[in-house]
Amino acid sequence: MKKLYRMASKDIDRLLEEQWEALPHVRDRIMYYSELALGTPYVKFCLGEGPDAPYDRDPLMDIARVDCMTFSEQIIALVISRSYREAFHNLQRIRYLDGKIDFTWRNHYTIADWLPNNAWLLEDVTEHVGSARCQSMTKTIDRKKMLQGKGCDDLAHIPEAQQLTTQYIPKESVLEIADRLEGGEIVSLITSKPGIFSSHMGLVGRNPAGAPVFRHASSEPEQMQVVDVAFDKFPSYLAARSDDVGFKFMQVRPSAVSSTP
Image (cartoon, rainbow, N blue to C red; front, top):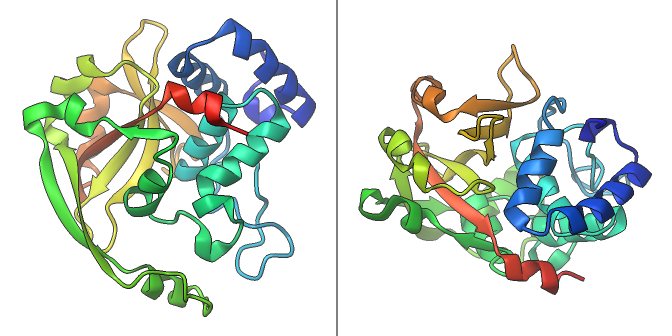
């Protein structure tokens, strides 16, 4: 099978139609498509609002290159779609509040915007997975300050700075909760840095032996592509990320598939 990042739109059309029937369960399609994406080159901030956009002129969709966020978003868009055209439109619905393609309407903040604005699609399963291990974190999210730093000035629709609280599973518990993961979950790494909750994203996959892996677009200089990190290697991986303190887990709602355009 050709790697996903080497496929043309017509190849993806055929793939989506075939796998819709062959893999009826959402989590199986997530694991299948994300496995096909292994090796996809990493490029930071690789999606935007198109060539005529005022702030970010990167393309609206690009399977041939990803960062951690766009890898997760594009895989989800493929999973809930039967064609490349449908995946393109679903991706914009995922990336933008109300699907409005505009830099200032983009879901820039994973936990503060992307997760709640995609409630039609995503379910936060952190407390289900972590149960009594969960802890809470409160941060101030200042969207206007961030967007002003990007040169944006039309911000009447942007809320003032907000204090938000979220639940997360401490990273020390990663091996304890591994057997509670079904596969196909979206993973957000939670950071202690101020002003944001999420520092990195990926998906839960399975290796050939069936063991869980963290599948993500790695920016490590020796990798710079979509790779797997085995869960039994996760503690050493996390030790090198001293600012990251834990995880959130999300799942695609199976009911969302029938609600897509």
